[in-house]
Length: 553
Image (cartoon, rainbow, N blue to C red; front, side, top):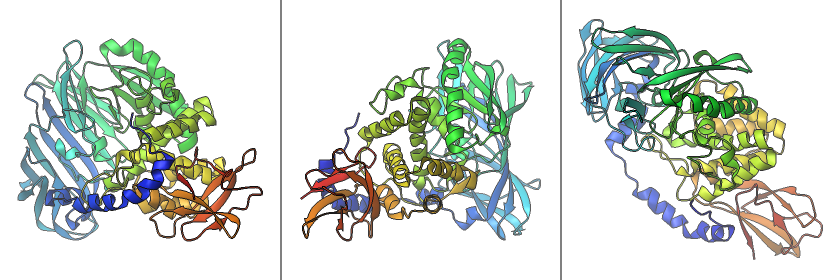
């Protein structure tokens, strides 16, 4: 595991890495293709996606797909041209509008369609894209993206999609930007007869075709992000279960390879219902009762595909048998079940508009691992788990990435983001209020896409504390704040050393044998530490819950 940045190194690194951080940011360059993929231009914002019908056939032997996607939309302004997305290695065969072919042209992976007459603001309309080709083959899913082609241990074909980051347009045409989630969707996938196909939502129909293929129709009744749309093809068996949750009976389905049925019943049974109970308590009702909850055996580690979570943790506890927190606490449960299902609340229900804010999805979901540990092993163990995640923090660059170019920030969004949220919980200092904040995020932004400001402003308002500079420091800067103690006018005083203007954050301090006291400090001036008997030598800061450096001059 990567080693943690110690509090002693933190002070040095605050200064030593500042210029390096500016250099890294300066050297980042992006292409027109990046902007076309990541920007919300008028050619994208001119229409709001209401419904997709994706109808695609998989020729597994040739690694070839062909089919169509129907776009139903509402115009948000008058326009004659719009953009959809499809990777350039896939061919747009034709675009049909009112029975006629529309002209289109490509610009990298963006496709621009021209209409014969203006589409009027507020009107509802549709067009259909027909396409074909050999999609990108994922070599190391889910860390890269595309389609995974492999076989199970019995030699049967096993195929799945995984395209977070890379983009869903790597295998199907859509408006490939997280800001616009389709309201509902029909997913029709034709596969060689004898195999089964599992996608998101509920199975509506299975049709035996005349060409040696079988079509599976799945309907998603809730908004869904593009990268969450999934295809899973294999020798699957369905195990049915249910959970009595906050909104009533939740249907649970496990789609597993035929030889995994026995161990799936036991292994999934251990963690799925406790996970649902814990997350409904902390985050509110499971967001997709109408579409059910599924775990699907996948030929890669895992992915948060909405209502069809990809599972590939080899039926082991922990993360492939390891504990990312180095505490041993993570070995009591299956990491992929807990983490990827946690994304149903943060990632699928509440989705970042721009991938630059992927921290909204990954930080809250990594934090959910600690909450699950707390729900099953107690609060102290849950916080120990979060503390242990510090070993995975690199402090290499900002967690928030550059906007409008489809670029994520640092992978620290996972452990450092979780540590930040636990720290904010400590600052709020009221677990009932903190739980209401977490549940309120899911309720306020139910089935919505959100920005950095949406989340930070909501937490500020509900906590009754302005945490703007705290989020700024931990998310937009690679360094952590350093708490400096000094003697000023014969009094023990303290301040923060940071690069964020007007940085203000409370911290818990005490003397040996005493109780922690929350004191408010900033980086503008030293503030007296009003604790009787406190000196530079005996003052202690709560570095278990506060991820900070320490300096005593």
